[in-house]
Image 1 (tube, rainbow, N blue to C red):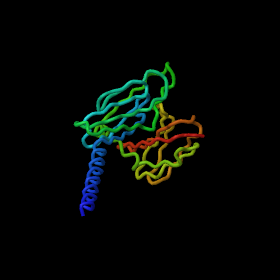
Image 2 (cartoon, rainbow, N blue to C red):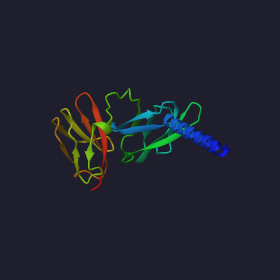
Image 3 (cartoon, rainbow, N blue to C red):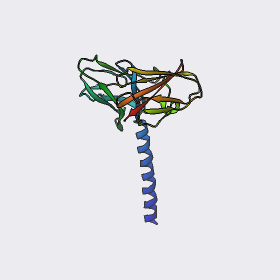
Image 4 (cartoon, helix red, strand yellow):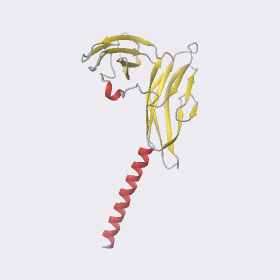
Length: 207
């Protein structure tokens, strides 16, 4: 009987520890989207967990920033991956995440690239790209299909430097066919705008 009671107690404590661990993890969670918003300018929009008290950003060039919404400038040429770590006020949990996009600065003569981390409320016109855009295949060898949008709009394609390389008007409820075959391999950003809202999703070109 005592063994059975001990097992039940251990099981309950184990479940409690698991729930507590999952709760702490959710409080310390962080995700973010990153992409060019203008030539030589990238916007990063983080979504922090419920009790996030602080954040530390790693820019991939040896520099870091402490704060929820910092800015950074890349002056040296290279490919840079952005990461962020967060923690709660009691320092009982922490986590780190990195974005799959790479900020690319072509050469030393190119102007610096500015990175701005902003809140979701400051970017109220940025839609949830995972729900508003559908690109396939991705990665692509050149031809990309954009799922039908509910409204008329304009589709723009930006390269990793934030330079617009293509613009196409599309009708509502029509499937758009995008041609990236003349571009160099790399990461591109497809942006749909209906005049009020903007949705953006990255596509990898690998010919």
